[in-house]
Image (cartoon, rainbow over all chains, first blue to last red; front, side):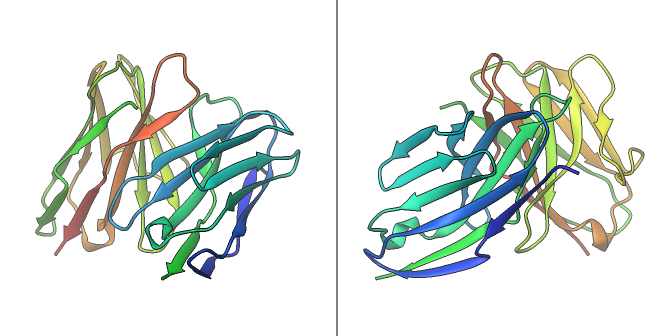
Length: 111
Length: 115
């Protein structure tokens, strides 16, 4: 059965304290591993798509990497405004465009 | 980036009434849109796939007679929650992939509260 698991469920960091979020997946026919940011009461905001093992993408303080079994979202020197829920999802299977989401990591960055 | 809008942003209704939620892709056409629901502090669960010009495809366990989906045009999909009950209270979010792109853009969500 295709599934995706995120860890940790919650992460508290001090401003400037770098860390990583993990997304482990088991899926046949991966069509992209997606990272989204979601603020409370809002829809998910697209961050990255990764398609193949070894691929990396960066945006400001965030860098996403992908292996055959997991993806990491590295946060370098986070700021309080980076506090949000980070969701990973995979697209795959026979239905193009359908995303299966992990349960998310709630990130809190304290000043 | 592409923009997807939803209306209304929040709605409060009495038990037994029906509620319609609109999802629009503002700057691109979407032959397919997706509807998700999200409970507090939980992740998004796909409910159904909305297909322009054909019937929606529902995920296992989602009542198609309860959640009516109509993909009226290439930029509009609607979700109607019929005879809503308190257990239908949730955050409903739509998404649309832009043609040729393996990326999906999400609407801002609709908070439904059924009293």
